Image (cartoon, rainbow, N blue to C red):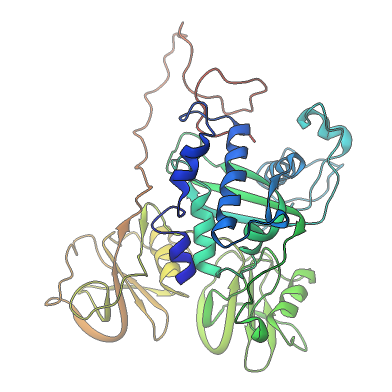
Length: 441
């Protein structure tokens, strides 16, 4: 955490503003081209590496055009049905594995419309993939990348599976996916492809000698999301595994297992997976259980977040051992962020229609998740109720969130004689003459 706070003070990276204006990578700062954004990401990644003393040639990272294309093809495979043909039998439409299609590469013939003149084809290469959802579409391109980087560094540390390639791989290719071009508040999904040689890790991981309960695989969060909890409908795999890494490999290789959740019993080396169609963890407290969620975790939901970095107090929010009056319990959750997700999205078929948007309470003793009616506008010390294990937070607005725009008026029945300013929902095969909200993939 100390390293993360030094490299990522606030919502940006140390020294990033100065590096940006020293290089001036965008000819038009409000409408950069894809090539300019790719160049800026290269400069920014090498700046981050220099912050930890990685300045030798083996640590210099360079963009790879085929990796950029592979990120695009994988997004198309996972998010669209463009490649669902008899030639490509893998299907991701109903998959709960966010990495479905990670190894997809079109045939040489089908690659041609995507390739620049000096590349005849893009082959398969060894490497790793990362998926991140911490960025928002409304964050400027100069610092959009910093949010997933800083969230990963803060969540996993310098030696985390998803963090390692940011510091050590020599080649990269990224693909950004905007799920709703008309909504600036939507999360901007980042798919990273890493390849090339890896620079030597200069700094020893203090936990490396005790990695039994860590998934030590590049591109994977090594630490469990839920400690002391397992999800419902878990499937124990006979014989167990000695380490979390071995359990992970077994789950990934077993066709009976979904690829999102995994549980390890640290008391007896038990290894469990979950059904292939499972997309929500209904968490239950069980001694010794460590449960991983391999899907990227969002930091905010519907524009609201919980600041878990604030110190608890008995006199003002956030409270430890106190709750507000009129609590509405909504079942069990794995942690505070999971509770917020349930309250905001109604996941797990929870009825949250009576929940307001001011406070939530998480019961650290049993995972209970509670909200409050909209009429509960205050939660002062004098009106709060002391109860053991209750952790109560005030919901805060995500500073990068913008409310959805008002619905557009119905289209005119008479064709307009003016050029439309609304972008097409289909792909463009020529350069745009107007500003672009995001560079083309």
